[in-house]
Image 1 (cartoon, rainbow, N blue to C red):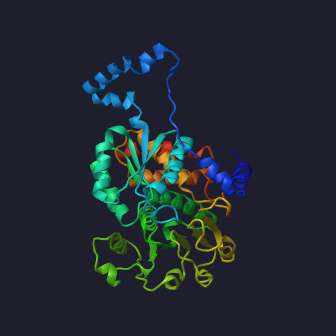
Image 2: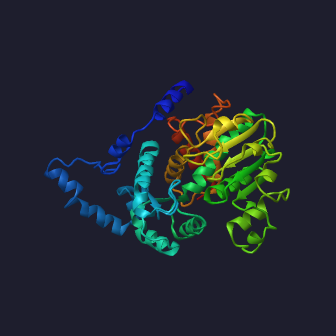
Image 3: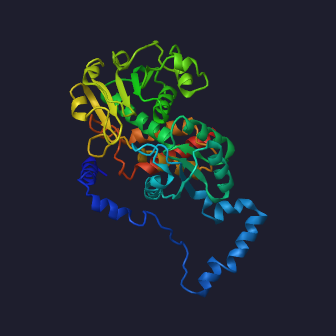
Length: 401
């Protein structure tokens, strides 16, 4: 697909939506289940259900591994949320989060050819969520955590990875991080820089911000500075020093190599890259402090940290999370292929190497038409999911997971 065709599709998608159109599309939900076998006569019923199904059930009882090939569970992703951090809406609860989770399941099918169902839970207790999914484990093959608030999301993901023998990933963390790394790889090339030498400021130290910082450090970026609502994260800050087990404290030990203290002004002085994954606004005056030909990713939705037309006064490359501006950094570039690759490989974990492989695969697809307005492929580019799937499956094999 040419970049011109992709642009046409994206422009069409970005046309104004009406409330009537939106509600009509969501009426009765966005998902349904279809049979993969015929059910037109008695013979069909005898094969698909009784008495034929009993033979398959007996066989699985005798050899549990047959459940991987003779049920849909091995290829089924459950999208799990407690509704505590939904989009930019915050803690709206399980019931109100369900339309989002239905949409996520629809994306799994459309882009990854994976069956998926949403599971929204009326509990915010980490141990209760873990126990629920452990008990449901025979019914699914992978867990996509979605819209779980920080810092609980870190504990929940870690406990599920330990408790379950299947791929688990919190997409708000790692899907975001993978696509940011892919986009930054392209942006660095456009501006004539190497990843390793970039000075990066990440605004937001929640789920996405910490995961972005972690993957950038893993990819070789040496100078990453994190900002939260209190300013620069460093080991000397009283609240961070008082909680050495927290994710912020752990990141303080790995990031900010120049020991910067203060706020956005101090962090952005001489910075090459700004990555916004919070609702905090970026002052235009702070943009002036960044290096020439800077890179600005303003990813908060629906309102970016800084409007692209303002950022473009100072930055050589600007990206957002929206489809109506160039360079949309969208998780759909990553998560369908990551889960498909993990399941194709029979992986029990999604490793850092698998995430890096996904980011590199996405970045490579943009190389042919690379420009300031095209640093990642479109979310609608049909090449993306197969490329990510293949890269992740290969990395899983190398990691022996």
